[in-house]
Length: 258
Image (tube, rainbow, N blue to C red):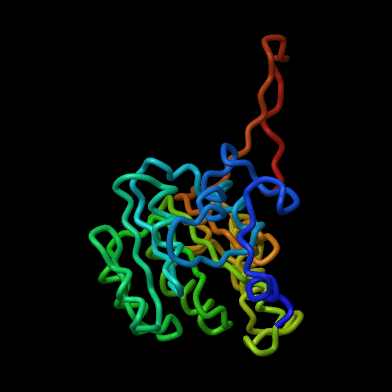
């Protein structure tokens, strides 16, 4: 596939300075520094992902988060997350390949199973009682991505972060995708955006406040990646403030709805 050409052609390790346009400096992005100076097992990531990771995940550094990454492959990203988040971090790798069990150690757990199997995902909820960060870098098919989000997103900690990588497969037929095709992860995610606005719906038969509305602060769409940030949400409130010279009969805040 053309989109994977850089992975298989050349195999030259880029540096974190001038090799790639816009590559972050070591100081700006320690995650990129680790990746481009990889000290161990193989790891495969799109270059532009590192800016996005650092933007959304830096707040967890030094907080000993529980990180679940679906898709272990060569095993190189597991120590990368440990290095980035710091001491006490617990990483759980999930993969369908039993050979990935070799990467387990005292602070890294490996669970073998198919992310497209909802019964297996239910077992993950039982085996991993807390998830602060979930990164879906698994099989990238529509069935897998949607099943994983539906089964595990509600289980992510109430102030956690959910990352789905390689969402561009929603455009690729061999992953079950296609431009604006019903049933792709991208089209499914677009529907979730509406649910953020459930507070303002005038037709609760079509759209209303639900568990997603109450648990999600925002969604971010990038080239190949969707990030969901969780936070307990309450009904939005609008205020109008005045300075000391406000008239005594100043009106309350304008209302968009009765």
